[in-house]
Length: 572
Ligand code: GAP
Image (cartoon, rainbow, N blue to C red):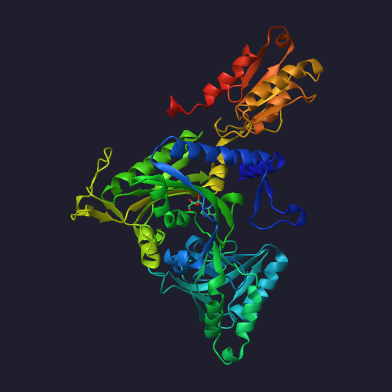
């Protein structure tokens, strides 16, 4: 994690990533992307869009509204099912997801048959306050001892929960009668930071941000409804229902995935672009989730960007296309990686699948804290289109005079081919959904190298980003600060900028080696130096970030040299 901290420091220092609203103390989980972060994100997006939209004739783009009305997300199942379980720790007041929480940690002990449970407080004063809280309110009568920042809970015996998470129990030693126990239900997890077992029952928590498209402040409506004559003496649940009903017509959500915008436009796109399955719709944009736990910088944030592609197919071709997209997407990931072994694919277990998916394969990256999802390729079947047909009468059925099998399809599921003529079917969907911010973080971690400089000097950092992803493509450096080098340096920079490559001119009075190192640190693949020889014969040197090797060439050849290197291998 020391290297990760060094990377975060670099990102802040060199303009990749800033804490949002920092001058006002910051907003938890919100980040702003600095000039280099914007470029890196844009380059990732461009590579994705180029490969999956521009290079194909079966995928088109779309950009739909972030604000999504209630009926769309009710139909898609997000209103009722897009939930995580949430648990509160009554001791630390932390809120967490039980499915991601660790199990109890024990320390064996001679004087307590079941060992001791160490509860870790942030400091000694908090430990003392927590011990008092446990003994007076949370679990009165249990035996505890204080060891520095730890409160030790003494245990007589312990029963693990069964496979369904039921029947677990911790029997604490009673302080007044040590042979007796005071029992606490144990569901198989504890609060992640402290190991505290003092938890509320789990309850579902909807992840969507709700807001109201209404000039009248919804809080006024809430107060009016809740305090009206009609609601007097009603239960809290009944009042809540009445309030929800009043607010419903103006309720909108910030979309939790970009995909629903694609599904509800399916018919319009097929008609206006004259498309028939198999074909895809790509969308890039922001999504929002009120995550219970925000973690690891930009890894899990409430506001994030997704690169999503919904590929619509005849149902009988589903297996083929699911395999196809899993392979194609993983290939894209590996193409930009330095350490391919840190990327893997993992099939979902049945119990971790989203409500709309019948199969899903994640792409995962080995972050410094462990494997984490960066993309999901899901078989959504005809779930979404069918839900929208049922709830809106949309004309999403495809009608074909003749059943066709796409020429490249190797695997056909015969039993899903309709027998009637004309053939009618609701297309299946294979979705690839990639988080842009997580992708940026994964490639930054992958590219970050610290190189020893010897002689007790601190290591220097190099970002070995794939040149197509690198924010700055080239830095042009006059050898000294003398003005005679500047016209040529500016001409070279101009010629590269006209190609759409972010190019910087570095004319500071720093030694050339130092200027190279500053660009290694932000991942610039090439540095061009204008020197005395350049003034005589118009040649310059171009230095490679990864090898440090330099070549001399005419300055007008730099454009072609870089262009060739940036060309996608697949283009050749
Ligand atoms: N349309 C399908 C869908 O949204 P998902 O697995 O929930 O599927 C897809 O999300 C991708 O979006 C994830 O693989 C991840 O990269 C990214 N993602 C999801 N939640 C995120 C969050 N809170 N912060 C950052 N990225 C997130």
